[in-house]
Image (tube, rainbow, N blue to C red; front, side, top):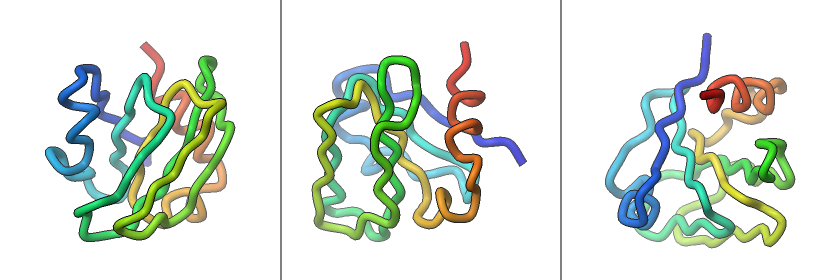
Length: 103
């Protein structure tokens, strides 16, 4: 099954992140670009984070970040937020992300 990633392109969309948009089931994600830090304040569930460089290659993966936490990656250009457990369930998550982000 393919991965669908919604892109948060405006400042307000990135600021609100998953507070304004819920993930689309187990195969949906949210791409924040540019973004080097994510918080889960107020989110009801944990999420997976994949921080990407400018070539959309992973530079850091955070599995199941619980609510009320912060994750930072200074080397990242952007980040993809995914349902908790997605990265462990799909070892090819990096390929899936690159395919989903292709123009």
